[in-house]
Amino acid sequence: MKRSILPLFILLAGLFSCQDEEKPMVSTTLSDAEIETLLFTREEEKLAHDVYIYAYEKYGNILFQNIANSESQHIQSILTQMNAYDISDPLNGRTTPGEFTLSAIQTLYNNLTSQVDQSLNDAIIAGLWIEDIDIYDLENAIAETSQSSLATVYGSLQCGSSNHMRAFYGLATQYGVDYSPSYISQTLYEDIITSAKTTCQTN
Image 1: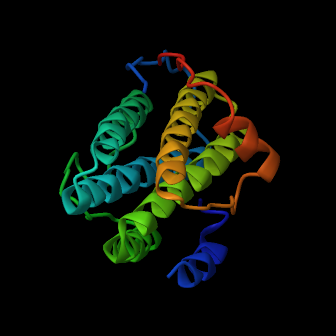
Image 2: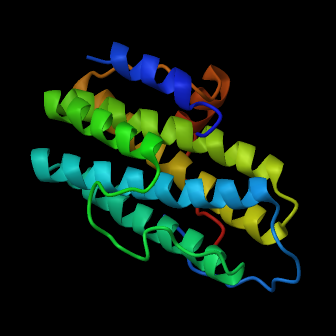
């Protein structure tokens, strides 16, 4: 997401599972870019969790709660990696909804929850959009890292996000909601939504 945060605000203005933990054997340090991505992913996954909880509390649709529970596992997977590489959690483990240290994530949370407030259909679009950009960012994270432990975790999270996208697409179909991807390709989007749910590799 850090590479795509600027067009993100333009998009938002126009819009109106899976993982067990593994502690890697660490013998190297991470690059600055790898650390930045890991810290960003930690808050990006919390963003998804918090927006879905917000949507569930507003509309009571159990899908949002189920996917939020999966996002909690994603968060823990990232925290496990941070601990393994001795990287401090900027949130110190706090789980307060809507609380972030990165201003871009905080602004995005505010924008997305405002979108959720408009209607259930808008909440579904928000869910699809979050998974769209998550899959895109995780692909970039995998390409960036030289650490197999990180690549494995990012790949598992990406698998989970694809399952979430399938679930949101099913809900969108039920309510007659249209969505076109903004970050992943149309071809990849169609491949995901037309394929079966995947059992993701544990990490």
